[in-house]
Length: 324
Ligand code: HEC
Ligand code: HEC
Ligand code: HEC
Ligand code: HEC
Ligand code: HEC
Image (cartoon, rainbow, N blue to C red):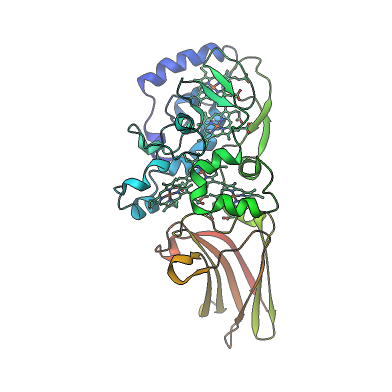
């Protein structure tokens, strides 16, 4: 995270690092604490893995995101702000939209937003005890109910419940927070535990290609692109109507583009009544005529967080060349 990295270590950070030192007595950290992303509460001093993962996540970007700024009129539309820089969700409880917080909004959805309760204790499911801070074992932590607090408004959770994973109370984290065995804090003698990766990977090439199988072939004068949603517990894409994906075929003669065809996967219910997103388990075949003289095609899947972005600024989730 660009912004988080330059903030450096605050005074609170330094004092907490000294507290942290007690727990890292003989362990030699393989990094310098000041290189870690800064978090509110300085969790990174003892939980470096979670902090590094989280800094790469969209949760960390939720407030600073340029596409969010555009869509929320430079963060002035009040109804848009709370989920993108929330007070701890445990204050109102899972299922209630959180309140907007006043401090350090640039951190977006951070450690404290998800873990801290009104008494300053940190919730999790592992039942650990430590002198560092109070912990609470909460069986609801990490359930679909928790993620739904913010993700239900765009129908992600409704689609999830109709999907083949829909009965699993941990379905969201099982796909988006894979389990790794490792110590969950810096400290002498702490055992490896079942920790969960905090990158919250969503619309990335790795996740997309795991979730959606793509094949393509030439059939006479048609190019046929097949998509199958095999491991996605909701539509592709999911989220507010600003978020779209595009399946694109560019036809080439040598280096020259001789034709282009795009299929939009988007929630257009409010515009023309159509929802063209790929549903869980759905197979779809897109057929496009091959222009005369084309020697090959480049097939891509683009992802935009705001449909008004030019194609050049889209994220490429998939790219392949089809020759004939
Ligand atoms: C001074 C070191 C230190 C700091 C700072 C610290 N923690 Fe911890 N935390 C620990 C230790 C040690 C454990 C227990 C590790 C174990 O037993 O494996 C722990 C456990 C946890 C757990 C696991 C709860 C469970 O049992 O499921 C959570 C969640 C947690 N911390 C969150 C945070 C958050 C959020 C912050 C920052 C706001 C933070 N911690 C700051 C040392 C720290
Ligand atoms: C979007 C909510 C969310 C955010 C933000 C978040 N966590 Fe977590 N955290 C979780 C969930 C969910 C789990 C796993 C619960 C389970 O199934 O055991 C978890 C687990 C943990 C644990 C237990 C060990 C592990 O890695 O699974 C620690 C420690 C922890 N988080 C610390 C942090 C720290 C430090 C930050 C900020 C750098 C952070 N979390 C940010 C939701 C969050
Ligand atoms: C406090 C509200 C809130 C909670 C709670 C929350 N999220 Fe999010 N989540 C967001 C927002 C807002 C974004 C979009 C951030 C952005 O891109 O601006 C997001 C983004 C994501 C993304 C990445 C989307 C992408 O574009 O790649 C994933 C995956 C995700 N969340 C999963 C989860 C899971 C799993 C949980 C439950 C453990 C959870 N979230 C809990 C608000 C929340
Ligand atoms: C079976 C695995 C699976 C389950 C269950 C699942 N997801 Fe996903 N999710 C994926 C894959 C794969 C992607 C990447 C494809 C895509 O962009 O839609 C993804 C993408 C996302 C995105 C980014 C969407 C976009 O297009 O920008 C968000 C947000 C998200 N998931 C949240 C959730 C939440 C919340 C839950 C639980 C209600 C959940 N997911 C359940 C596999 C899963
Ligand atoms: C109830 C919580 C909540 C509220 C309120 C909310 N959002 Fe979000 N927002 C989310 C979540 C969750 C995601 C992630 C969705 C996904 O990718 O599936 C998100 C993602 C986004 C994205 C795409 C990611 C990005 O950073 O570009 C944009 C744009 C966005 N929201 C704009 C808005 C606007 C504009 C409003 C007000 C009209 C708003 N949001 C209100 C929860 C919320």
